[in-house]
Amino acid sequence: MLVVKALHISFVVSWFAGLFYLPRLFVNHAMVEDVATRERLALMEHKLYRFMTPLGILAVVFGFWLWFGYGFSGGWLHAKTALVSFLIVYHLYCGKLVRDFAAGRNTRSHKWYRVFNEVPVLVLFAVVFLVVLKPF
Image 1: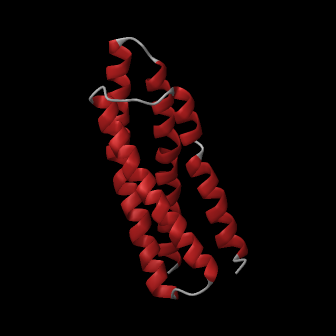
Image 2 (image 1 turned 90 degrees about the vertical axis):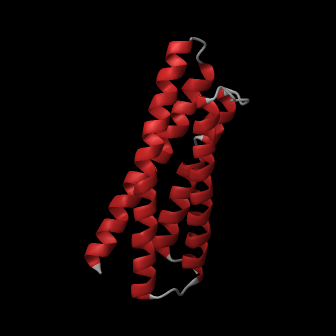
């Protein structure tokens, strides 16, 4: 089970790297005016999303493996599961935003994306504290 846990942590870290960087690309994309830069950012967003999606899937798969191996008990694990479910929705929404930017349908400002960019950071802090402290 330690190998499964190590793989889970590795895929979570990799997935979060994408969750941190993709919204930062959105900030830049929402600020640019020239077509060439917009196209380059849209391509970068698409490639990053395509790369990070399997990482997120593997993080969840290995998380389920741990869940079935160790059992599902404790309020902290219920809270963590809720936060991971929220992250999955966040990830899928990022995919929608990637498609919107690629089609030229973005309606939000770079300021909105700056706030949106902080969401996975807050979730990561909450999850790490839940896992380490197991407060309930």
